[in-house]
Length: 319
Image (cartoon, rainbow, N blue to C red):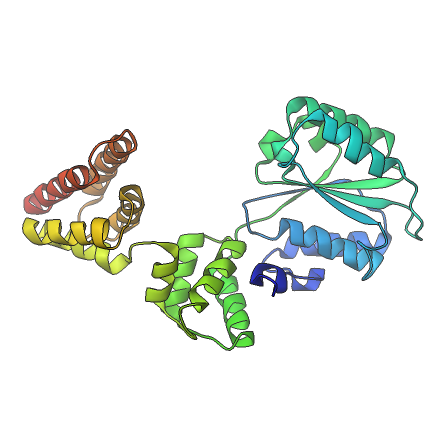
């Protein structure tokens, strides 16, 4: 059985979510068949690789891979210059047997290539542009050398909105016979931050716990502390109830098994919702950064987080 991320991968440009400008431009390219080299850049899980496959399918037809008109190479597997000289060059120089007149090579995670490999690739782009078009996929465009960027049409992908993520997750849940509530979707989006691949994987993992996917199931599979638990600790501290705050903290760290730095990240998000002044929030963020650093250096998680809660209590008392 296919993982859901493969099962529900978009197959045409019309199925790509929340990338309207990119899709519109690619459709115009399909009409003219004047395909340039392209660079797809943006955060992970926003549909870059899926868009490249959908574009090739719309251009060549259903058998675009089987007919040898499209090949995908992941640069993170082999980052060196040998990959460019052997695999890429060998594919790019072969003459295609199709009405379009060129093949497409997708170089995924191209920002992982070394500088030497990128300079070699630049030369390949010049030599074989008549027989091959290149689509480069990169999370960080600044890691692609300027000579390559200048030879490509650059398409920037943006993170998916909460509305688009919710709509797609509900569609998948309905297809799989699941019930998913809004709180679960909020928790998934809060953790994935617009990465649809991560959202779908979380939903599939949560579905193993039952046909009803709720917030508790989501927090269970991602090993994440719930916002309610974090807020409870902060409220105990602000009320001066340090025994209760310590017990709640120990329950999260030792019973739920949440890592201290994961709890720090959750506290960071909750600080902005606290009923304290903006100046106090700034000060707390500064303190929280120091706590995060100390934990990373090996300090006691419980002691460091309790020291942060003590600072919070002092500020609340002054207010």
